[in-house]
Image (cartoon, rainbow, N blue to C red; front, side, top):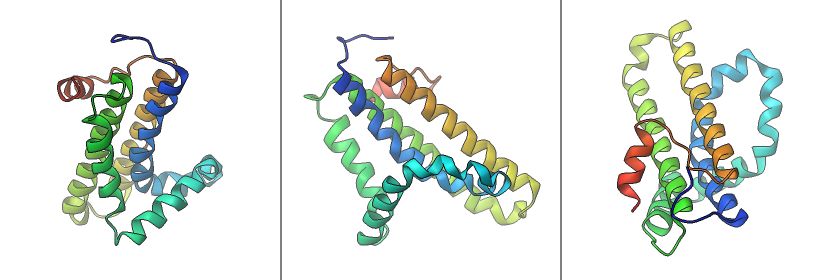
Length: 163
């Protein structure tokens, strides 16, 4: 759905950028997936400069780099009404996807030792990783096409935050 005006190619490009945040944070869940399918590590090669930069920022800021990027996106993009609604919507959706990943990591950290380390844990990690990749690919494709990525429940929460 495209509303609140049309989107320019520049807007579409900037709307795709925030999705790197959940993608980079979600790669930790791909540990078992890439162990099972090592040939697919080639997919990560185009992301290596972004991963190196993100890791460098995170280390330079004593592990708080991700948190700073998170708040910078929220305060400088989502809450800035002079930025196009399309960009702010996608930035907020990427932030909420990242929050979901953080919650998954927290919950698995709490119950991870009780689950053991076998098939159940690997399956949960693979489902989270593949689901995250699918949602991000869908959102980026929709953004490139100039449409709002409608993800059930998540997009409703984004619409409430982004006016």
